Length: 69
Image 1: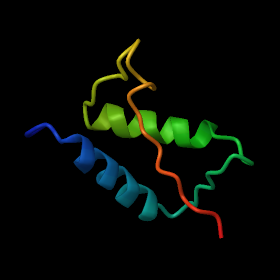
Image 2: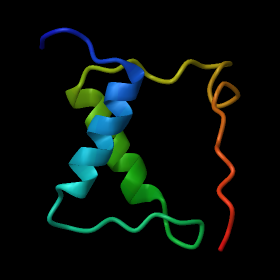
Image 3: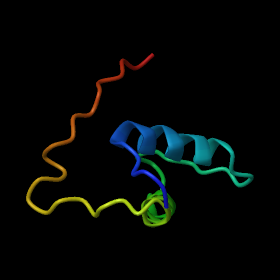
Image 4: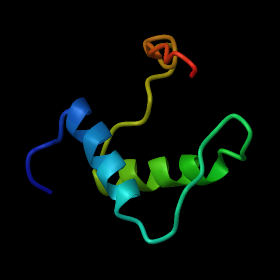
């Protein structure tokens, strides 16, 4: 593989890969998240990304607040 991708490239690339899939993926608090976990694992493996850091993740993640409406 060439130059390692940055975190933002990984996020955008994963979103583009999802958007380009023939089979839709439904993600919400009302649906089983197993499929998205499997897809993230596949994406990370193919792109040779490190595993989340134990003792750091998920505490280092900030979730945006999206107003409902």
